[in-house]
Image 1 (spheres, rainbow, N blue to C red):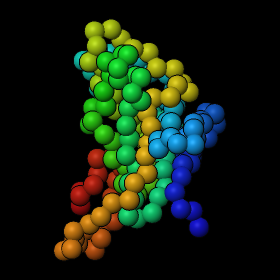
Image 2: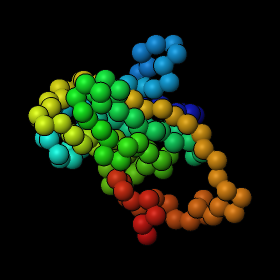
Image 3: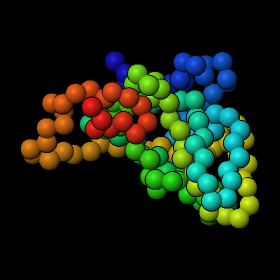
Length: 151
């Protein structure tokens, strides 16, 4: 039985996608690479595909953070500050759980990202629920990106 990790999205298997990895023994985050080239236009939102999806336990979440060097050196931020990938996003019917990184270029110059460049880091975390939580008794996820809570 798989516990947690990453897989290539099926439609991206022929694109030489590298699965996220930790680079040192003490790294908390798994470095996530761009799945293709992208140009981040100043003041604009750009969704950069990664070609990967993540699987984890039902009480876990994958938190997506920008790499600090990209933020500090290039004035880039994640549009949602921190990305949240829920466990039921994996293999959803809309996009198979494909993780995209939502960048906002706060600088004044376009910034080019190359395929294979490390652009974010993912950290798996356990989370707690409230005593009277009923979310686990509801319907299963019906879609992909931005679908939590939709009927």
